[in-house]
Amino acid sequence: MEIYLLRHAIAANRDPGKYPRDEDRPLTGRGAARQREAALGMARLGLEFDRIVASPLARARQTAEIVADVLRAKDKLEINGLLGFEFSMEALDRWLSGMPADSRILLVGHEPDMGELAAHWTGANPLPFKKGALCKIVFSRAPEARGGAIEWFLEPGHLRAIGGAAE
Image (cartoon, rainbow, N blue to C red; front, side):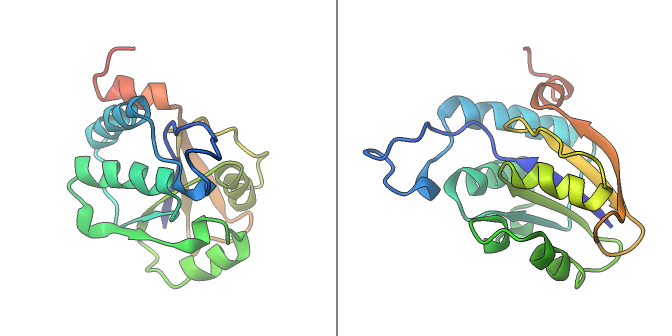
């Protein structure tokens, strides 16, 4: 199984007057544009996913929608509360254990969750996921604690450069 961890792109600042509920904070225009450039890098890398699973929070959902659009995979997009406020590594492990062993799944979520998942699955220290960073973790069987290996970790600027965007 291949699991890809993507932190959402740049979102609006917390503003209780404008966004009384944190889960409603959207991507900024700059964040959406940069994520589209990064998604072009994902396409250029030849990445394909069986499922694109996003947190229900607006910023993660919008990030996943951009990736799904660029990769022409809108039919693979789903929203899952396991990546939102109900985040639990153990619950996510159980959910993923029901997936086919050859699955390629993109999980779009938040920090510190993405870094902690990478640490949980590989035994490494938590990775600092910048907004828009992407990590590939491979498993010989279903995801479980210390059962995976990081194949690569790309900062958002790397993805944009691969996609042909000028820095």
